[in-house]
Length: 257
Image 1 (cartoon, helix red, strand yellow):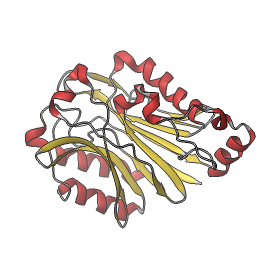
Image 2: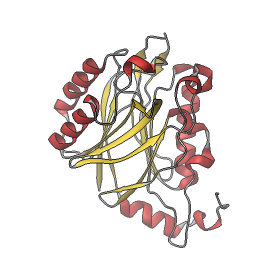
Image 3: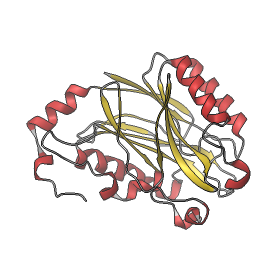
Image 4: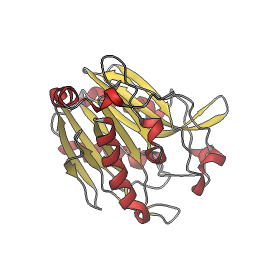
């Protein structure tokens, strides 16, 4: 079993410390968990002002994430603004109790907000292992591109069990968010988590929440509304193994380059 805590937050605009403190407060009521999932750009909101906000990989938020992971003995995941080699990245960080597990840079920058003008796109799809689970991290706009998130199947089946999206997905397109997350679960026969923010950001965009945990059949296990919430979900690895054995759609999947 994998126990997850999904934090659907009203992010404080471009305020690292306030967001870190708010997350700590939200987690005070958390029960024992294996994974804590935070939204996209959880220290700042979806800002196109990276220069004064970006941190380096050994920066304050990375150290804070390590401390949080150690405190809760859980994997902490979410994206932050990172500067590396004089470039800015919307970077997904997975931090375990013992330190950094992996990172993933957002592949599809949201051009309608000008993200592609401020941040470098990632070049590598990532799958990593934690407590026997193979996890594929993705960020917000990546959700619209099914080829990027498609499982790569080999003789032993698909290469991941859990697909995680962290997001700042606005209210006008919430129906797309709901539908596409279900589609990703069904087509990949995988558990899917989508963690979105709520509230209004500094660019006057309103966010609807609708954070969700889905099973491999697309069934909603837990879903938030438009208010802040700590959502709890439990996934069973045997369920996905049994389903992929009984209904092996993956054996007939088109090859993905």
